[in-house]
Amino acid sequence: MRDALLVIDMQMGNFDQSAPVFRVSDPLATIGALIARARAARVPVVYVQHCGSEGEIDQPGTPGWEIHCGIAPDEGDVVVQKRHPDAFQDTNLQSELQSRDVDHLIVTGMQTEYCVDTTCRRAYSLGYKVTLVTDAHGTWDLCGWFV
Image (cartoon, rainbow, N blue to C red):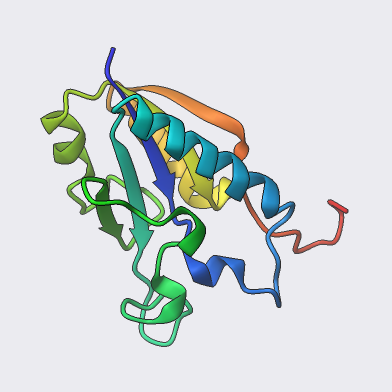
C-alpha cells in the first residue's frame, strides 16, 4: 500500500480571526506534525488549494488564497488547485496520485462538512482506501454551539 497525505484548503483566508476556526490550534499543530512525519517517511504530501471567485477571500493571487504559512509546501510537495468541493473534480489530483502509485489517502484539512467530506467520499468511490484523521480537520462554529 502506498500512502499520500492530503492537505485540503488550509489557506490563510480560512483563518481570518473575524470567524475563527473551531479549535484552530489543534488541526494546525496536528497537520504540521503529520506533514513532518510524512516527509521523513518519504510519503507524498499533496496540498489542495481552493480557487475562489473574484472578490472572495480565497481568490487566486490574494493573501487569503495562500496556503497557511505554518504548514506551507516544500519543494517536491504537490499542489493541486480546485474550484469545487470535490478535490478530484476538474483537477489533476487523480493523475498525480496515480503517477505515485498511491492507493491510500490520509486526509486532513478544511472544511469538514464540505471539501473534506466530499473528497473523502469521492476518493472511496474511486477505489482509494481513506483515513480521515480525527483531529486534523476543522470548520467554523457558526451556531455558537461548539464552545
